[in-house]
Length: 366
Image (cartoon, rainbow, N blue to C red; front, top):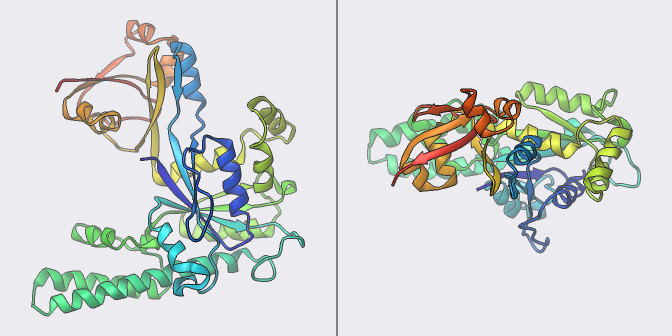
């Protein structure tokens, strides 16, 4: 399953413009038209120049990048947790994503009406955070009621579970997200069973005017978003959604020329995808051969057998070893054969922790 990121924010902050740019920038393998309460979904290849370099060196007939899935969740409004603006349905969609991309309007434009009147990044962020917290509180309250009834039997574990939920309710009531609540052992399982919205990691996307690129320096709205992100221990990606929509219409050569003319090394979408990977602790390994060069996404800290299982369950079940070459060594040598001859191909066992950029061939027997 690809990484799923839900794009949230108030109406008219640039969410749909950003989503449309993402969808046009890649192969939209799952693109559902917006109707009633269904969200738009787009699957986009993750840009990684290393994959294409490996394919070139190996003469691969096919190149298959790893993908990331974006879910455009309709604009939330104050009262969403109570059903305003079909809020209950849209909040349910957020439960299904791995991370939240919170788009914050950081541009002034009298032709684009702000739902709350004037642009105010701090207020806008607080509205969204409050609605997610209120929905989580509702979820926890229901769980407390159910657990309290069951705990009347005197079961010690149920009483411990009830105490955990009550502590969590207190934290949420004070305005702290569930992700700030440290859990261990059974508590972690109880937390996961709630599917809380504020447990999900958040990446802020500051949507600015083109004149504020590349980093939004001097933009007071961006400064406020950065201040809030720093307090929460997360990151901010500054983009211009309108510019990204224009870039998505160009071919690769035109896009690169346009970026160079603007003094930009990467598109905002590339930086956004990379930031989402960093947020979730994801890395990429590669499998390379004459038939196909392919990128695979795993969580940082994954061991070789589990990485093999991403390709096929038989690879993990019958894992023998992983023949591994670091990306830099592969490129420096020019081929797998040359890397082997140089003694740079390593035979790694079951305890090997896969590193970002590893080029791997799995040996297995079932």
